Image 1: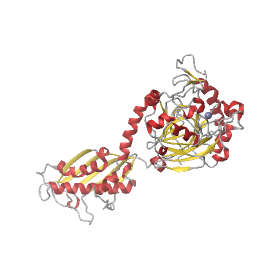
Image 2 (image 1 turned 45 degrees about the vertical axis):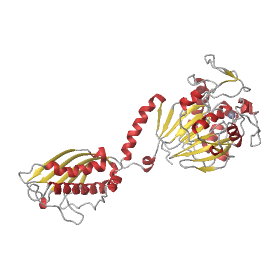
Image 3 (image 1 turned 45 degrees about the horizontal axis):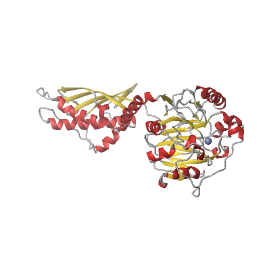
Image 4 (image 1 turned 90 degrees about the vertical axis):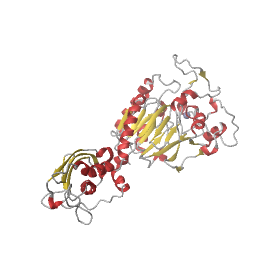
Length: 475
Ligand SMILES: [Zn+2]
């Protein structure tokens, strides 16, 4: 697991730039010179040995200067003769192509991997020429064409193609090359796909590794609930006895795709928008039987629904997830307790009232993405023994006031999860305020003390303060 994480932030408005940079970098990566060689049916020979007191190539800084090579065949024979006298342009072209293969064999031996070539800088092509012969470029094209076929854009080079009155042993061409190279990258860096986490507010996240899009407790509507709204928020008030309503326009503007939805419990500020999102995206939903029963009442088809109890560890095509038993925040000064559960016998009729979104038991998830493991939390509570042995790269830590009612919450959480390199606070905001309203109070009250606590427990851990709808990129 790569624990040396590089972190960058980007605001939503900066994303298009970042995305386009990512795409161009990927295109560069995707052009694999050795795969191209295989497609061309070329097997590199053993690099030709120098025939005197010199070496095949010298590296200085990021440049490799390759000694001149000629059209030596696999059987040791060479193409000899003079262009314009006894060797045709076509034969000369083939000789130059063969020389390119020999130079690639030298490079491969020096670098181990031709993908380390940043670009081919300069080629000097010498053609054994009759004084009347002036078509040297047409001959050296045999070299240049193959180099560009193998390296793509990285293969385009500056070049001289000149005539010589004779060449060693009478060989028809001799060609030198200068290439720029990079260091071999660590295997972990080579494989790492960036993880993108977008904070949706409350305990909600959109997480993607480029292959799979996973939502966690996605609550977008942020209803003005229980009279807890802001004077500048002119939306209608909702009471717990009101019928639940999702802001579908807002959801449509934020959620465009989801492959999985991980549900940590059934309360409205977690599950309220999931009936609409599951229907809209066709995402597979993993949650307690209570959560699944609510979604069934809304008509979500069974093949999208996975009822779990905690302890399951499921492998899907591009993604695996371990379901971790948990407990809900100790609300109401620890007097909160709700043992109600829904199941197939429960008579629910959609749309539900807000108060019908009951907890139904709590879960956490260890979501395993391409090279990153994320441990999610939907509450300010956890079962310590259930987290033993889990070592996430990224912990989405429940961080609000109710955690203060628990014994050594911060220390036990950070230690039992193996001091994760990255911790991102979740469920710390005021979810009764719409997006765009200040959450500074929650940052000051919840996150700032948490950052101080983590700094003392695990100085190497980076705590990232998330902002609504902004994407955090973890490489
Ligand atoms: Zn809750």
